Image 1: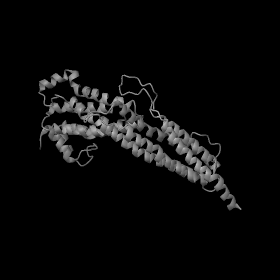
Image 2: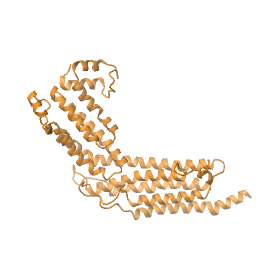
Image 3: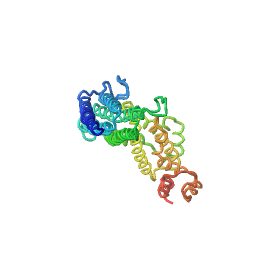
Image 4: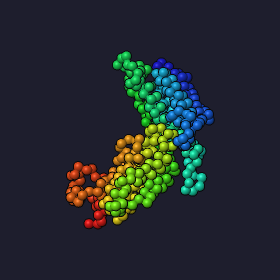
Length: 378
């Protein structure tokens, strides 16, 4: 009797509900992208005000995430384990294939920031559209985390008893734990799939928009800077504050012009991701430039070089997390070694790792080379 009742409930209620829910969600995602709109009034010109409010995403994100929340609420309200077993994984799969897949196609086919001419910069509208699509992924991730926590009866919801809302809906056996696992799996699979595309997008934004301009900025910052000054020249530079900070001010101007327009479009998390990639490349380029000064730096010039490197690091990391300075550890340690007194260097050159209290990121050979930039080979 029970088996017959279960078969009837399954055939007449559960299976149609699962089928219609799948159809409804897939059609909703499709419709959301058909009606998708990008925020207007965005510009990379920092002098132009932005008419929209951040975060800058397309309308499809809000629409799809609202529908997702409704679908999960209705599925949970059935209190049927079989519904959850079908609906939640299916919806998660559709988020990956239809939602993330559509964003990926837009990034690849409609908004990829290709330069119009070789060696040039991509058109502004393509850059903005691509950055907004990256934002879609980041904001969607946050949405889904909040939706899952809400359905699980997160800490923000008052608990009048020891039982969670999920246990009230699924009181039998381990059903509540089963449902929680399904919801957590949906959150995790979306984070993995969106994270892969998000990281790819960050790399594209870096390689097409930022990377081509980093080395020219460094070249301009160090243009006609002499690191083998006489004492008279050094004293003259120290007496002129503007000249003493020339490298930092040049770099700050170029770097700011590059970074600020991007920063005001991206979400905070996405900008941190992009800045981390950009600073790693900048640090590598800066290290190669320091190495290139081998034999072109005297003791007075080493003092200025250390100050200039420090100024560049401060300007590059400005407004970001302090930990971003770690990317420049090799550069700062190289200039530190260049300016050491002979007795200090003797201790460092013979010490075991960490004896001096300095966490060296330079190998012994790299430290010796850094010393030879000023002092010559020993």
